[in-house]
Image (cartoon, rainbow, N blue to C red; front, side):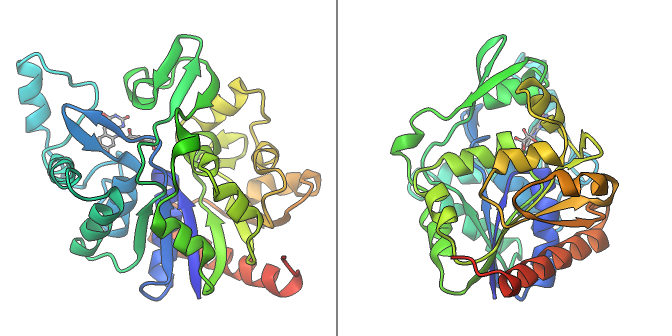
Length: 316
Ligand code: FO1
């Protein structure tokens, strides 16, 4: 068995943690969004890769959602005294990741550095950036075109989103590790984690060859809805869907993925929507992942759903 999971940051990392825990070592590849990456204070920051890595290593800061547990903030405090740029808060522990990644990226790829950090932190599954090229999400808003972290952190998602842009993406390549997982003869299912469809998954689907490879898959493709009871479990997904004129519900999530999915897992509170969703098979379960037991349970339900789909339906 081999599973490919597509993930962004916090929501994606929770399901990835559950999948990593129940699958034998080496059988999970988490392909992580790099559209949120940027250069800040001269450092190369990859927020979603770090969130997934820290979470799978059991080192993540659970209250904050990003960064490391037990973090201290002396660096950012000292920077503030000097009048430095402090809107993006780099913790004292976390900054080691950015400094070491920045140093190594002078001669190595993001894929290599990410894989090595994961191994050093004791992770026995594969974490791959979706691309080694500089994929950078830009957010077209009522306050102009904004770099992703300017929109997300500095302006706290306040501007009204009009559209997302990925400059130069037509000339970028998906990473070798991502494409190898997608085309592996061992692959048994592809899972789209409950990440923000627009901010975390759209950059991945917009990379050349990715949508085509997904459309020609020979295994079930399942998404877990990040919208529960008309609200995003975390983050601005509901606000953005509303601004883009998409229903803030699992119906809107299904519309976003359109014909791509074989299955969509929605929360029990949205059971009433299941007959309105046309296209994918629907699995209705408790999708809230409050603790590691929940994460393992949701992961097991996703895998069982995939197995039922591959037995009951021929996917060609
Ligand atoms: N998110 C914030 O809301 N404020 C921050 O100051 C912040 C710092 C930060 C530092 C390192 C890192 O890996 C992530 C960080 N994040 C911060 C989270 C991150 O910007 C977003 O959650 C993701 O890009 C969206 O998935």
